[in-house]
Length: 345
Ligand SMILES: Cc1cc2nc3c(=O)[nH]c(=O)nc-3n(C[C@H](O)[C@H](O)[C@H](O)COP(=O)(O)O)c2cc1C
Image (cartoon, rainbow, N blue to C red; front, top):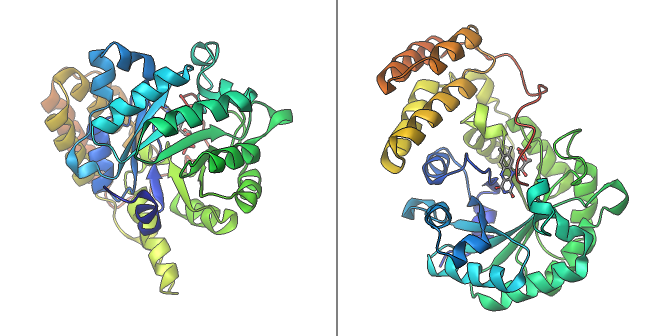
């Protein structure tokens, strides 16, 4: 069994869970591209009661993905505990509870971030799940329900008392959704008082930003979500920066190296082809071709052409031409532009 805190020390860059994106194929690809610990997207605890195919499929992972956690959501502690046992039996390294999802359909039932309004219920939930499994339990929260009730710090103390291994914090309130910016000063304050490891999350879009946030917040690790969707090299580039800091040299590799997007895209294709059916394969190939082209000259025409294709080979031909041509060009900085302003955490 992998020691996940040891893994965190070795590589503090966790791939954030993203529903519909971080499926098993994408996780294998990101691991190859330098991501540390991996986590599935949120999985319905209720779905595990019915052994629903869709639910069990979401819990799948491949051996190369260890250390990997399965994230669960739900409102009933006993059903969550049952789901956690199912996850444990599938051989994952830890179970993560989603206490950050802001989506009304989820929150209305009392799941996701709704539990941040009732810390007694959170305590009971964590205790019930923790006692049901032997593997580590982690949680992912928001800073609080709204600006006036930011209680992440209290949550870390409850989590610590209940034997949780770490708390990941998306630096926005539930009320904010994805608007505004993640409040890293707040994360830093929570970390400074936290009795257990804190993982910072939110708006980590460039290697430079990630290194600065780790330094300033003193977080034990960070979770990277949308940042890896336009830049598949973000984990490698950040690790290089962190390692060069340890050696006290200054390298600025990411800005001088040519980014071989075509090779990266091919590796993504390999993992999708190995693990997905044709429909998902086509959707993901188109989506990632569009995201990876962001900021390069001719990107908007390229996207139009990609979304008009019907055959896989057409996509690959267009992508090869575009990405090979962009190899020695620097993309425009688009990190300030709105991008995927909605999700389950
Ligand atoms: C499309 C999408 C789907 C998401 N799905 C999940 C999820 O299943 N579970 C979860 O805890 N967070 C989910 N999130 C939230 C991310 O894990 C992360 O907390 C958030 O995007 C902020 O980090 P970022 O700025 O690095 O993307 C999702 C976010 C997006 C954009």
